[in-house]
Image (cartoon, rainbow, N blue to C red; front, side, top):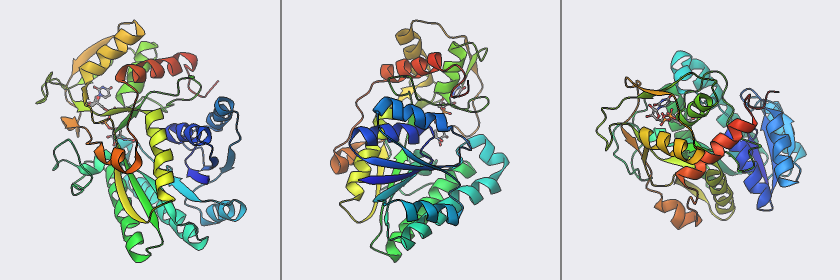
Length: 338
Ligand code: WQD
């Protein structure tokens, strides 16, 4: 099969390219490299020994998307492209709503016009909001999100669900990611955050590398076993392999399906820090710090639907995530920049 990946040069997109190529599929990437690098795709080709067809362009631009769909025979698409920084989304909400929602709608319109009606969407566990209690199951109602980034994911889920109702020829798989971390085991591709990282694992890596002075661990008075927040961290290669299964599923089924991609296992901030130190034989400079606004005490998946529908479950451990993240960081201290 031949799949279009919008945002395919990004963190999750590039790892999904590897997984798809390794599974014998072909990939076409559309990316504007706003928050990613074409170097990631060259590295994907190096890892797999296979070719990536890449277009530079914006998914909000219908002419661009139509040109790709005119040129390439596409069986289904994964829509990764989008802004993803939680804090930034609070500062510039209109940019987030405009870009994320526009690109999803534009992509669907162009796909429809080309008769390509199978889509996998990068959603997020953040859509469960504050009302639901983990472990999260896909049949829970979406909750109130704590930031505009989360709302764009929730709104796009609704838009895509309505699209399927209006045209039953469509197939949409909404993948709700938990906390993707780690990197391909080669260390050639990984997460390359711009500026100061917001997320825990990149911040840990940069602290270990001496780029950041000290890790602040936000909040130790949560109602959790050790007082720090619990998250369902998932190795990005497990996540990538989940996309392969989701696309293969989308080729065989119709309608809308929501699927959690998590391990089903929660780890606290302290547990992640300890695992990172142990597996990589180092000690991080770190301190306890006040809670970060908007953090929920616990978030983890019930991962049984992915197993049932896709025959997929995560196989990599927290230790694998910590080792591979550090391997990537050491080989690429400045990310994809020279
Ligand atoms: C995890 C834990 C922090 C940094 C976010 C988005 C979500 C999704 C993934 C993607 C929390 C703590 C963090 C640090 C720390 N978005 N922490 N020190 O908040 O679960 O999810 O990323 O595009 O929508 O909300 O992940 O990695 O930021 O935080 O103590 O320097 O680590 O407080 O408890 P989060 P995270």
